[in-house]
Image: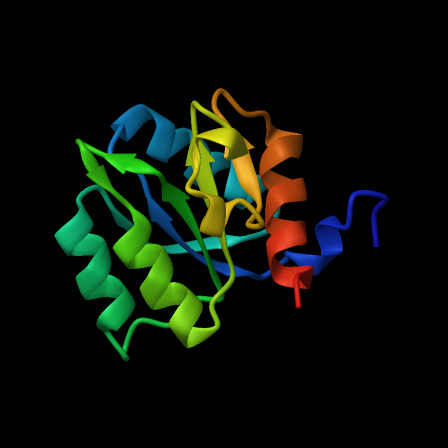
Amino acid sequence: MSEDGAADITGLKVLVVEDEALVAMLLEDMLADHGCEVVAAASRLAQALTMVADSGLAFDAAILDVNLGGDPIFPVAEALAARGVPFVFATGYGAGGLPESWRDRPTLQKPFSHQDVGRALVEAVRKP
């Protein structure tokens, strides 16, 4: 395993929820570089909720943009938490911009680096 724990996420199937197309594409590239597979991407809240509820869609973790076109992502976070699926919040405001109840979750501060994505996902999947 590498020093940053990258081996922990190799082969991980990830759901990406991001409303900015360029950011979503960047995330997909970064995840591929880490050996992850993006199994689905959503850009709207209703679409993300449908994907999380779809029992036929298998994924191990998710990266969630906190603000999807003005809609907060927290209903998706609640659904993932209820299923025991690890996830990372992505936001320009950092963890301090999250409600207190979600501040214990790994957070990617936008703009983020390749290393930031790997570290946050490792933290999410290792979290008890």
